[in-house]
Length: 448
Image 1 (cartoon, rainbow, N blue to C red):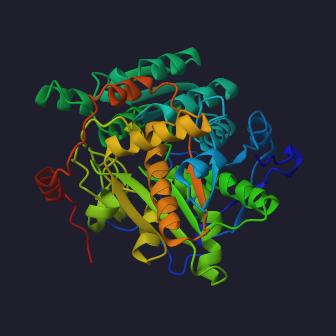
Image 2: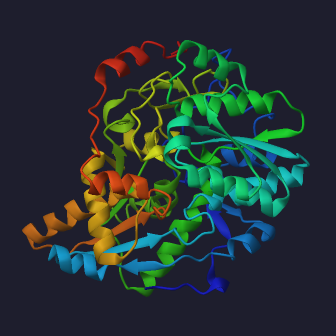
């Protein structure tokens, strides 16, 4: 294990927008379809500024650093036991974010967002959550900064993961299943489909509608947008220092993507070496679920980030904002689109993408648990699976490559999913091609 002294914790977030070979496509206003900045009622103004900044390094406020130090720096591990079980010459490292109070990487941005909202004088934050990691993190941050939190939790996850709800409520948040009776969009969807399992797109719409309705409320999101990916880069910046301690540089970096915050936080501080030409052969592999394969199956197009079309229109790989993914256990990956930064890098050929079925990912998660001892959340089980595949390829080729896993958190609240896998009840969901085709007919018409 590689421990970083707290005094050496990074004091700045890294902004990839300073080093992109081409600038990001602009956001479009949901009504006019013209280029826009995010409307001020959505986020605290400091977050709006970070969203569009091209400054390479953005200082982490001391108040945020102080909270970070309650669990950061996190540990970089060498997976010796997994390497031995696979009989591979590859060296496998994983940066483990499961030691935060919320059990995942999500507090890295939750704490920052709650701080900026508090500083601006708002009293309340609304948000959505899929599997519950983001809702848990923001609930914790709200408790630390004295902010009221309202969470719209995707209904299938609300039912599958009751302990996540209890965790959020223990920190003082109010949690409702989405679609809910609390908003106009929620009531409309429930009237049309009372058994709707919900989706992140629906939950985002409900949280946005709630935030727009009150002057004392801001909205927070746990993934997708630029400032969230920015806050997560503390993970990769720490890892760079720790890999130096290990006298190693990754040949392959693997991470799961749903909206993109976890993996982007790890790989953005490394991809600048690829962009500059210092490490042109570095491979960055994004792993998504076969049930919601936006990067691997979706077109690169402008689309709404939410079902109701309240948020700005993003250029991204998308399955259509009306698409509702199958109820896989990796609830944090059930999103129709992807972070514009990741989509842009994929379009430029700087990152790779793969889609995996959930049964195979849980098989990998069990192997990881029985070697490294960590019960992995369903989301990072996806990249554990691909890392194992790459390590086995190294065995076949006799190559001692260095593989780095972005491990976003533990699965202690996901044991029901492991029970389904261990009992043989867990099932795969095929790519819903017809549903995606239908959803893509609803993409917004935008000027060329």
